[in-house]
Image 1: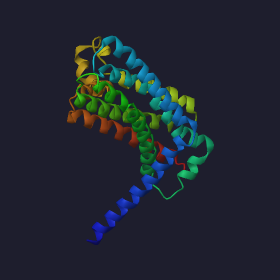
Image 2: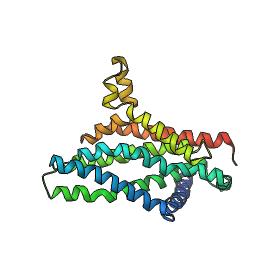
Image 3: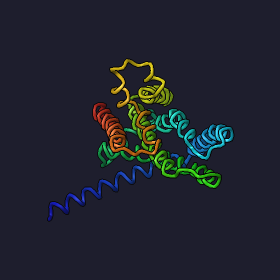
Image 4: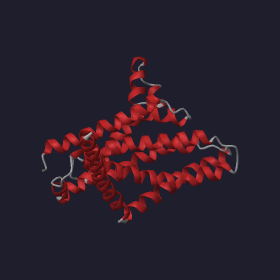
Length: 252
């Protein structure tokens, strides 16, 4: 019983540390104009692209919105993560952070969850679109919900990858550019226009490893366990690599 109590106490203590770090990172967005600029740019671009198509098609559905979203996330996610490690290292606060009584995993998870919740808030602010469209026609809200869920997993994958890349450099611009490039490669790997020109024997591999193919599966309204496991594995892999980078550089 004592052992169980100790494990429970350690878990709660560790969770509390992650929450403190998460809160710090999330407030860092909103304590500067960055958060408001990102949210405004995201909402303006995504709504403008969707409404242009919506009024032409005249259909009460959001499929086009979620087809544009991954491309917007390609730039938004690396812009959100580029400073998370690069700025810390350039300003010298990384050394201070890593001397605190917290583990590498707690720091990485705090940064990741801070950026993920910020992305979630940005997505949540677009909820007025499906609500408004539902009054104009009979829209399948199940598909919309699945698409939002897929968007969150897709965005989380981009953020995990961007956070890892940010840990490799002190330059935010380099972190942003590399983040966009690698997120783009990961996304188009399973895209239809790429698969059409790929050799037949590579199709299953590219479909499995492509970030975009799993997103479009979920966006169809089919929340398959294999797609969820893929995204969770992808996120875990790059968070794990982030921790390894911290350990290898020995900043403590």
